[in-house]
Length: 326
Image (spheres, rainbow, N blue to C red):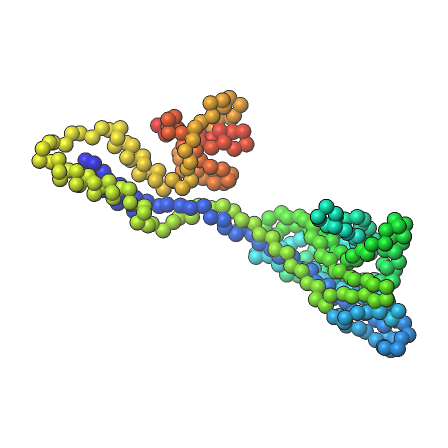
């Protein structure tokens, strides 16, 4: 009987479907922000004729020659499926003074100067919205110096143009709202200022879901039942001449059957004990081990097996989910 049962177990174990938990990407979108700028020559100077337009990427722009820059900011959102959102933009100058204190960089002071605010624009997947404005660098320099003089704190400050994008709507069929910031740094000295040549940003947002995925069968799956099958053949061959096989206890057969039936769940189960004091927990009885494990995976929990009590359970949000293995 043992040989027959173990042989059946070995065959069933090989055919048994085993699963593992994987994270599956279910939604994804990327936000893009791009700054471009030009610098017009507005003051008489020995280098350029007035009205000349200086392009991006020069090593420096002189304050006495070109104190004003014309900025364009472009925003778009691309999703894996669809997007229908409202976009509001708020642009400001942010001056920040930092120093290293106690081994880490800390902000000593920060001041925001509103520059431009624009109402909602409706955009779909891949469409763009653009903001255009001019910025007087000399005025920004004067603002920073005024703060430094009032604080009697001459430490240099970093200057950034920050565009804050508020978005709200549906992305890939789901309701989404959020805020994203894009910044353009400007380094200002006493006589000139510098801006990076390429100022492009992208921010990915990915949403994953835990799913149970079928595993390919392997030899290790049948190692235990196959070993039992081979051992039982050897045992029968050595004892058959001396004694008749006694009948196998039904309880033992039932135990083997349960082990076979639940073998595909072993990666999702840990051994443990039911809490002795569980009166404060809401008890929810689950009708099958499969349903209990699915619930545990969905809630990022672990299924526990109390061998003495013969029960499988998990605890989530003050509720005890339990399967009585009777």
